[in-house]
Length: 118
Image (cartoon, rainbow, N blue to C red; front, side, top):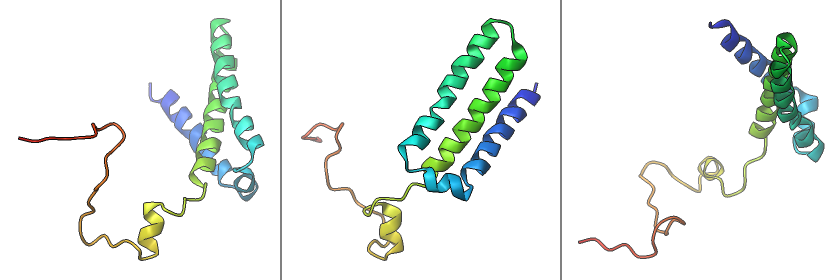
C-alpha cells in the first residue's frame, strides 16, 4: 500500500524540480503561470470523473499530473521575493538582532482591545 504514496511523492518532487528550472522561475510572477497552474484543479476534477466512469488508468494519470502541477506551483510560490519588512531581511541586514527575545507591543487583530488581569 506504500506504492501510491511513493508515486504521489515522486510526482510532486518532479513538479518541484520542473518549477525550479530557469524558464519556469522567470514566469512564476506572471498571471499566465498562475492560470496555468490552476490546471491542477481541472486535473483533479478530471481524475474524479474518470474514477466515476471506472477508468482507473486515466484517473491515476490525471492525479499524478495534478500533483506535478501542484509541485510546479509550490516552487513558483517559494521563489517569490520577500517584502522589505520581512523578518529574514531585517535580520540579514543587521537592523534586528536576535540575541535577545523579541517583544510584541501592539494588539493583534483577534485580541480584545483591553485586557485586564486580576
